[in-house]
Length: 360
Image 1: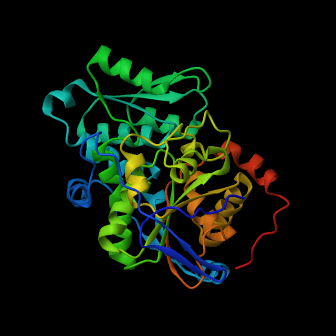
Image 2: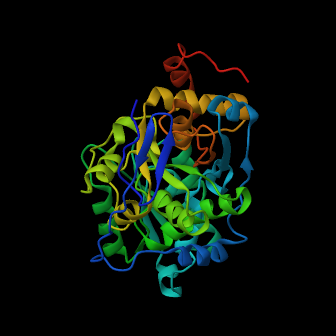
């Protein structure tokens, strides 16, 4: 089981039974141009109002008893297209020029961003082309196609999805909408945490699943502005720990096609925008095993009646497994998506069959 590191956001610390774990601020590079700010998140909230759902914040006495904390779940599994990704996709597509809208967009995604871009395109009457891995969950590909997207598949082991996306963009004149490394996408994703702070108030800890870092970067910007004492912790699967290693070494690390049930966190690395934002504003990073992840997911299904996909349960798993000191604290957890590949559920149940079920 992965454990939380020590380096991170300045002035923050973990007051726990074994002492204080201090965090230090790292200056972000400035050579890549302006980074999104909380003001961009505020503008995004206005831009997506009426299009994106304001998803509920759920609490559970069983979870509070289990963790010793007061936990607030932001249920982005109930967002349009089944994941937080709709926020960033709609914010980005709705800001395109009339000519860009006419020509259409291209995106690359393992699934949730694909659905989000396809749905936003359908709403805004913008043609969409989605580059998806051939082994993407069937439910995610089917949804993107149902929203009217053209699907182009690739092999995770051999092909570079970003190169395919750039080529299609150049050949067909399509606007490229990446899944996380885009200022409008990051700002849109940050509106989820903004809503959580508006409803729950100040938090001590915010646990955020991390793939390419768009949601994590946006959430950290929202926390800095709305709950300055909150320590934002990114959570990855053990096998896809590139962001955790990048955070600790302060150098961008990569991972090649990690084998994990958290398909939304199988990204190769943080991006040129998300990496400096994570270094600057995130308090810590941690990882969880697939076994812990599936156990947390099934607990959410059984006890909270919340259908969450494996990637969406990363933050909950970190809280349940004790990776992060949460006892006695007000803790936010973003449940990022609910697009479950039902064909895999029997296998997942078999993998966790030896894990005792926690009683409510």
